[in-house]
Amino acid sequence: GQQVMQIPQYQHVQEGEDFTTYCNSSTTLSNIQWYKQRPGGHPVFLIQLVKSGEVKKQKRLTFQFGEAKKNSSLHITATQTTDVGTYFCAGGYTGFQKLVFGTGTRLLVSP
Amino acid sequence: GAVVSQHPSRVICKSGTSVKIECRSLDFQATTMFWYRQFPKKSLMLMATSNEGSKATYEQGVEKDKFLINHASLTLSTLTVTSAHPEDSSFYICSARGHVGTSGGLAYEQYFGPGTRLTVT
Image 1: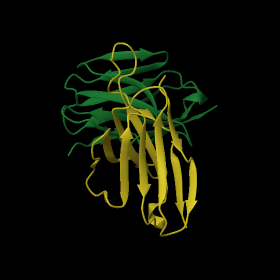
Image 2: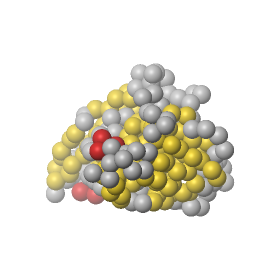
Image 3: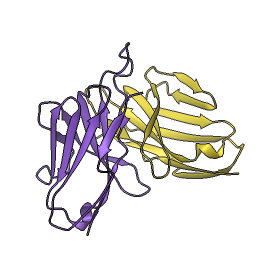
Image 4: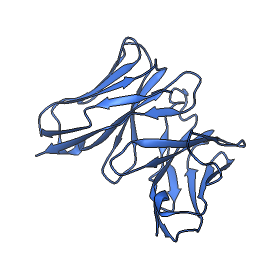
């Protein structure tokens, strides 16, 4: 079955430092989505990538979808304490309604 | 944006009783709803997918007789945990997917409810 792995599991940075989480699927994806879950909260949709090699930016966040559509990354420039939370990628596969969530990367930002 | 509500937000029940959790899409029609379970500091584990008017599709290892899912309308799905035991204690989250917006470009996006924390004593 499809599996989605994320690294690192956890990262602790100082405010102002950059942060990147990587997502890798065992099989080719039709699309990749990214979600953020704050401590005690529920996942909130950030973005969806569909095209091979696609790059999208949201302010300090940059999302990339690999050329082979099997991996993706989320990069945060100059982290802020409000970036704290767990970032999940979620893979969509052709012919399947469901998303397969990655293992998540927990980000802690110290002021 | 689209809003999904879940009720109750927290529930404590005794072992052997049943608990029903409701998931509602408030401002859009959810053709598909998903039920997840999440353990502390872990990822979301999909339990089942339900389409309005049809039987839910359960993931491997999820007992369909224990976790009853009903998707009676385009705005409501329910999860009933039957004969709950302490090991069923968890955070249960629903999500809904439908055609939101004018272009339909977000058709695959899932909108999550706030979750229900179930504690079985």
